[in-house]
Image (cartoon, rainbow, N blue to C red; front, side, top):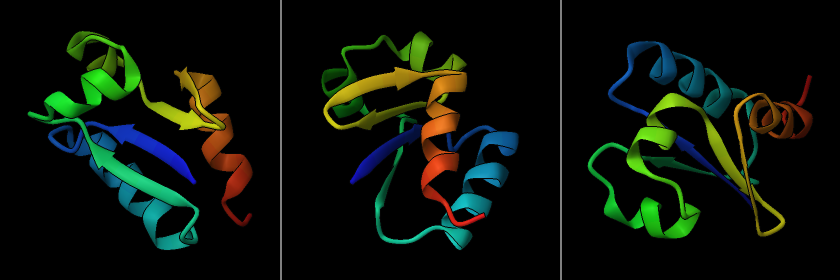
Amino acid sequence: MVKVFFNNSCNICRFEINHYKKISDSGFEWIDITNNEEVLKLTSKSEKELLRRLHVINNGKVIGGAKAFLVVWSKIPK
């Protein structure tokens, strides 16, 4: 299971993640970082870091930015 941390309060982020949700399978857990203290513990990232970039946890490793998108894209049917 890939945990995807995204900013649901951002219109652009929400739009893109909603698209991914529609075309993906159950291999993802979509986690809104907005007002979510638990994600700071899960990722060991600051709120500022999480707001600036998409992050995922894949195979126990926290990955951010473009590499996080590559993880998501690699697991979504083309």
